[in-house]
Image (cartoon, rainbow, N blue to C red):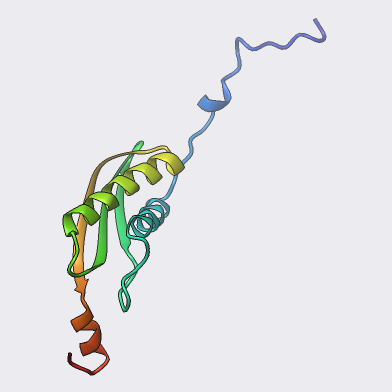
Length: 120
């Protein structure tokens, strides 16, 4: 009939195509999540950076961070892992079975003074 719509031979919208999110986009989200977990960047430090390997709906993440010293390094790395899993899952819809956190540098008051050319 004129007003009837046939749905039995049509493919649902979700089945007509695929959405692909580039690894670099997921890496950018992961790096920002790490920064959020650490409440920013140590004075004189570099922001967190990340690389990812995406397969289907799963992302394995590697994050490099610089931390203040002395501090609870294990707790900070745990916070980074949790935030990366949460943000990637929420924003991209991917599971994150693995987040490797690499502490690349520690920043202390002494190292900041040395960088300014003074010793304390």
